[in-house]
Length: 485
Image (cartoon, rainbow, N blue to C red; front, side, top):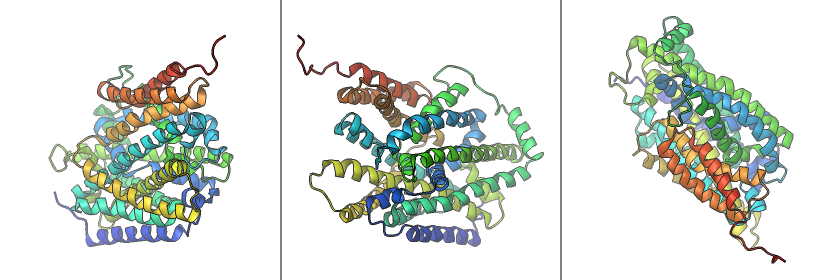
């Protein structure tokens, strides 16, 4: 395969990396308190909150994998979009008040108030494990795809993504994360929209031709089966997708931390709705890109079948490098890096907040000065940045579909976590013993479901098992505090 990543592309790509670093370093300020470092002083505009939540959840995996899923498997996964219209009002109305009104720093503080410290530490530990693994994938997958079609060395792309985002997050905290998110959001979605338009112009019949090609290839066929083993069905995407979205929106410190930066509960709830309406056109653009790329390569020869690329996940970068004029590949590869860096910066900041607030502050007996805690936050940001970058090299040994891999990680660990939140918020009987037993059984069940059902159902099934087990076992083994008369 011939690469044409020119000197102009390298220049644009390099300038973007430098610009992102400078903006991140300048935007953060000094951040003298933990409220400044983790929550940007709790006064962020609701539109900015919506943008930073959206940017943090659209990783480089999303940028590459969503068009690839449409290209390879068709429209079925798109019904996940409708599940956001169920998960969003549920989160805004029923769950967000629990977090905001209590003035928490982390989502898992709720568990200490409801069940006790041990459940808080368990939940926060599971979050740290899940997001660390997820961030490793969020760094590796785009680096692999970009390296395969540009010739950029894989170690360079992994290290530059992980360490540059860690550098500015370490200095500026949440303010640096927010303003680089806003900058990267424009590059990310503007780049994807440009790719879709350019590709559509190269397809006979444009968008209509792409639609007809997809229909003829069976890419528009829908599966309404209730079989939980079917990879993607309408019901799995809609119902299972709702539970997957609730993991990210309602139990994930990456999202909850951003809600808490808003000036009021009402602003936080509005930010969630704004984010939903921003998400709709963005997701449709990603799907549209997959449509037109499928049509283009149906007319010009499939590069996977020809052996020019090895995986469908490489189809988007391959098109960018081989079909776009000099300059645009550099900009659009920068857009993929933008998505990855946005996710990494948001993730390591949230991992640090969970570590300091859920572990250090709850386990230390002596009161620690605020300045010392902020210094610790910066060091832990560096530690997590290095750790997830190392995970990216480890994950490089596995070969899985990107859409499936990120949702499996989400479901196996996130499902029991969601079950814990629902157990604590919507049942009165549940106690600490039941919560711990429910979570352990839920984790075991999620591993079972991983081998027996579609990746889209893992979260829902394991959350339900966690709730039922936690409710049934609560109080069952405890001795009554007052003897029966």
